[in-house]
Length: 142
Ligand SMILES: [Zn+2]
Image (cartoon, rainbow, N blue to C red; front, side):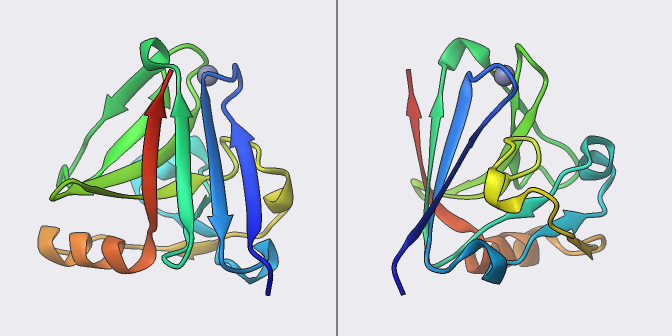
């Protein structure tokens, strides 16, 4: 199975992301997290633990937001307001789930996202789940 590469960017283009996935878009789970933050953004997130993600970010346009357990950091464009994805950093490594709706990744347009609820998860369980489910990630600034 050839690798598949999916790309998107925020509304103004300051935050770009690429997911080099291990399988086609149709075989990747698209999740609609039911937390209060993702609900407000209408986010649909995708990750692939066997893939690799790259964010290419204009540093001046990036803002971060942390809430609840503060185990993840959301990446938000300070210029156009798009929620681009969420990052977990631990021991010098990064994992992410990208918001394919916010970044308008064409391969996921019109996809029905599966609702997921992670409420009540302990911080350590949350971190362990993200390491299992999310994509190893690199962030480049320009
Ligand atoms: Zn933007």
